Length: 377
Image 1 (cartoon, rainbow, N blue to C red):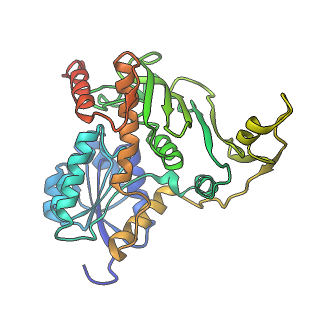
Image 2 (image 1 turned 135 degrees about the vertical axis):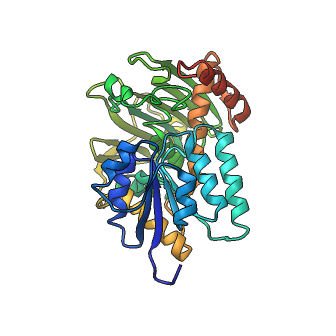
C-alpha cells in the first residue's frame, strides 16, 4: 500500500447490515471497496445495484484473489471469529459486526490468531462494530461517571424492551432464532450494544443471575424475553430487562449514585443532583424521613452527527493507516459476549448465580448440547 492510498476493504455477508455497510464504505474517504462476498447468488446480484466491486460466493477465494488490506465481516454470528481468523492469518485488518462471536472460547481463538499475526505487523487492527459508543449521549454519560459526578454507584437499571420483532423477522432466514444458526436470541442479536454499554459504564459484574424465556412469544428456540441481575463487589446492583415481544416497548436507563440519579429516556438525559451524599445522610441525619435536597438538570450533549457505523469505519481506517486506536477492539467486544453467555448459562441451569470470570468451557458445552438439539441438525 502506497502512502496516502485508501484502505482496500472487502465485505463478507450481504444481509441487512451487509448491504448497509456496502453503502457506507462508499462514503468513507479512506476506504475503497475491493470486493463483496455472499453464499447467496441472489444477494450478490442485488448488490450489483450498489457497487461494481468484484463478487464472490467463496470467502477464501475472494481473499486470495483480491488480496485486500482489510475485511469487514457481516455474516451470521458463528462465522464472525472464523472469518476474522482467516483474514488475520493473511495479515489483513478486520472489522467485525457485533457480536464478535457466539461464545467466549471461539472469540479467544480469534484473539490468539490476532496476537500471532501482530508478531509480523504490530499495528494490525482487529475491531468490532460497537457504533453506539460514538453517540453523544453515551459519551456524555461515560464522562459524567468517569468524573465521579454521581459518587459511589448503587444501582443501574436498564429496561430495553423496544426491540419488537414479528415472526416474519425470524422466518426471513433459516439460521435465525436457532441455537445452531444464531447461537442465541435477543441477548446475542439485538443487545450486544446494550450489554457493551452496560459494562463500559459500570464495569463487568462479579456475579450474574439470569431468567431467559426461550421462544415464549415466537416460534424460535432461543430467548425472546430476559431479566438479568448483575451484582458487584462494590455493592452496585444492575438490572437488565429486555425482549422482542413488547410494542411499543420501553427504553429507559437509570443510574443511581450517592450524589444523584441519571435518567436517559426518549433521547432526553436528566440529572437529579443531590445536595449531598445520600449515603452520608443515611448515617448522620437526625430527620427520619427527610430526603436529601435535590435539583433536576437537563444534561445537553453534542449529537454524534451522521452514521455511527460510518464513524466506526472512519476510525478503523485511521487505525489501520495511521496507528491510532479504533472505537472498540475485538478484546473489548468480548465483554458483551461473556455477559450474554453468563445470563444464559445461569438461566439454563435453574437460574443459579454464575460467578465471573465465566467458566467459558462449561457454556460452550451447554451451547453445543442445545445446537445438537436444533431441528436443523
